[in-house]
Length: 122
Image (cartoon, rainbow, N blue to C red; front, side, top):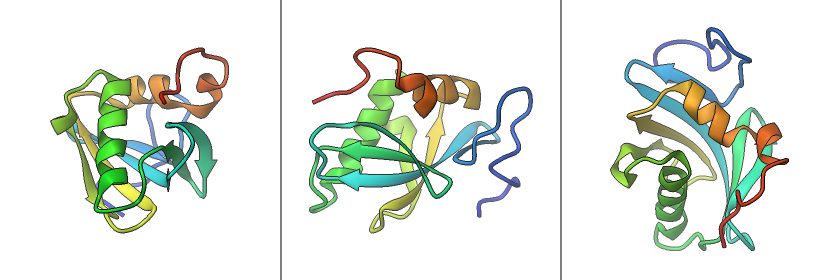
């Protein structure tokens, strides 16, 4: 696992296994489901945030779509979201700059997403 400790240690808020602060960046553990009908948060899977992406898993399209979708969802430039590990796997470690764990948790937490309208994108 990346330096800085356990993903479950977040100060001041409910801890989630898939998210932690790492200096000025945030590390996000993702389980990607490429080729989905639409892009959306799909819950949690094995301690990771499960994200369904409509793009197929061909020639890096799903990875690009994941970074673009997350950047849009978080209101960040796409260059701030990058894959640190897992480019050829469904399980990925993403590094997100220019934000903090509270913002990401509020915008991506599966429990909060279920009650909101307009969270999915075609």
